[in-house]
Image (cartoon, rainbow, N blue to C red; front, top):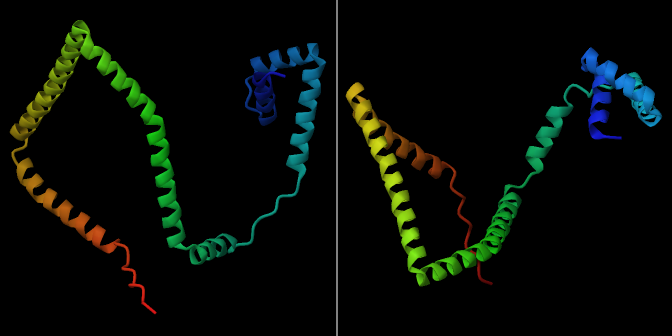
Length: 186
């Protein structure tokens, strides 16, 4: 059975299928006995699930689970595993980038041998740099317009940038790793 038809059958059971599609699906099921059998199985399963007793969890269960997780989780174990994950991720990225860099190097070497290709590459690089400079020029003009409209912006920036730096330094100081004691010699 097609996934689309199965999805439509689920929509019928959820009572979200529009009437026109419902009639069309029922007409298709009357012509296809295997689709009708599949719908009947889904309908019976849905009826059994709706008739099943529903149990509520005890009132403080979630709080007990969260408390237990908080007391049993060791942050050092996660730091070690996140370091391993970072190392594996960097190794995978390196493994994927080496062939790409080899192809780029090969293309550059072949371009250097061709004067026309080297000239085209140079033109593309110059065009890209001019677009970047045009974007920076537009950014500078926008900053000038902002300054003309709001002359207090430089004072605000002079205030917020050092405050942000102080906040970041305090955040880093509060979240620094505790010093490990030096191993004692026997």
